Every structure is written in structure tokens, then in C-alpha cells.
Length: 114
Image (tube, rainbow, N blue to C red; front, side, top):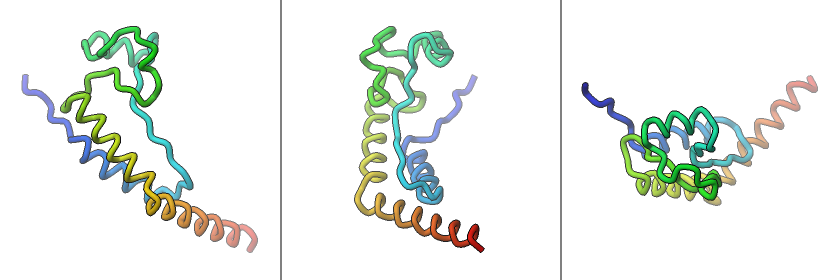
């Protein structure tokens, strides 16, 4: 059976960044996919032997990696995540989100007042 190709994290990050820019959100928080013990996700990844340290609650912080992603190494996932975070939380991007949100809010207030 041929393995299914998975897009790179940078490919995902590009589209996620565009989504955030276009969403009108004032602020955004990104976290790692965290397989908490006892959840269906955890059980699935355990069956697939993709949990790095089974049962280690210390890695359930939403920022630590405790799974083997498909199509990349855990290190590549972390590098991509940090690059995405640096970009999304840069002063330029934060200011853009907030300006866009305020503009959208003003327009919404004007349209409901009319």
C-alpha cells in the first residue's frame, strides 16, 4: 500500500497564518496537539505507536511534543511551531490583527446603530 503524502508543516503554517490574518481575530493562541491520557486521541496514537512517552503527564502542557507526527520528525514540528509563533506574535502581525479587529468592530457598531 502506498503511503499517503502529508503536507509539510510550513505549508500548513502558511495557510494557518493566512486564516488568522483574514479572520478578524483580535488575538490568537496556538498550541501543540496534546494527546491527554484517557482520551480517544491518546488511545488512537497509542495503538499507532506514535506516543513518545506513554503516560507522561509532564508533557501535557499544550506546548511540549509527545507524539510522532506523520510526514515529519518531532523536531521539525517544533521548529515549524516556533517559526509560526514568532511570525504570528510579531509586533507587526499583532498590530495588524488589532487594527483589523478595531476597524471591523467600528463598522459593525455603525451598521447596528443605523
